[in-house]
Amino acid sequence: MTYLLIGLLAGASLVGAWAATGAITRWLAGRAILDHPNARSAHDRPTPRGGGIGLLAGLAVGWLGIAVLLPGRDAGAPVGVLFAALMLACASFIDDLRGLPVAIRLLVQVVGVALGIASIGGGELVFQGLLPEHLDRLATGLAWLWFVNLFNFMDGIDGISGVEAGTIGLGVGVIAWFTGSFATVGLGLTLAAAALGFLVWNWHPAKVFLGDVGSVPLGLLVGWLVIRLALDGAWAAAVILPAYYWVDASLTLLRRLARGEAVWRPHREHFYQRALALGFTHADVARQVLAANLVLIALAWLSLQTPWLALALAVLPVARLLVRFGRSAG
Image (spheres, rainbow, N blue to C red):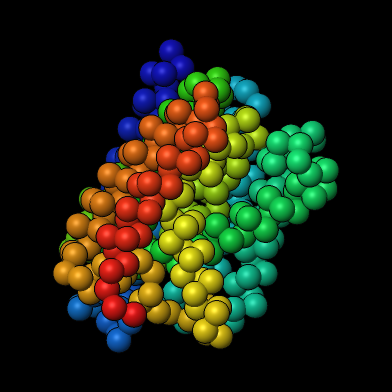
């Protein structure tokens, strides 16, 4: 019965995200809320920006359904995290429309992460007892804040963030099934379904972009799912599932910091962006990320038995993408 319920909620998230994204795309186009190409863009025509509202609407259907219908330790927490995501979505939509100072955006993200940290139960440790609880919370918050931003930074071409969110959701569902957290299984699979519904509109050539209103809160929600895996003891899986995104973003950040550049400004230096200069299409890159992420899901499952071996093997698909995407000059 639990699996049937999860399946129904996943289906509702898929249809809800598909329908809501279509509706918001028409609304954005009608009000000329468009992303106009510039020198740093990977697109050549004005496109509605803000389709993440539809993805989040579909995802909220599934997550609220799980909170109400599936009992257990993890079932109620999505409500608080969704509230934090809604707060980030509101601020990010304002940023999409007219821009907000970096300090204000960061402050809102800190508050959202703090609300998420507050949902973690006493005695639950992300870093597996290596740190005392107060330092564990601080380190988790800083890592989560970085994940929110890197998810936003990596949303630069059609399909890539929908693929990343969907495969991480699928991976979380698989791993949580083995750890016995059925509410987390449902949360992961409804995320995967909502991402698929959004991808119908965002696959290249995209009819709508995610926008900061989608990528920032989505980073918060995906990050929270990964944290839940670590709290359940699947710490290696939590590192492996989003490995391509955090490695690409972190290496790019360090490279730009070394050159003294303002890291929050738009650029085209991520490995996946450099792949376009080699002749890859948006769809080519998204498919390559999908293939690597499916391998990472298998390695995340392996990590439940042999975490260090799985972590070592996870270097291979990530390194392959970085080498394949990063051969362009500069």
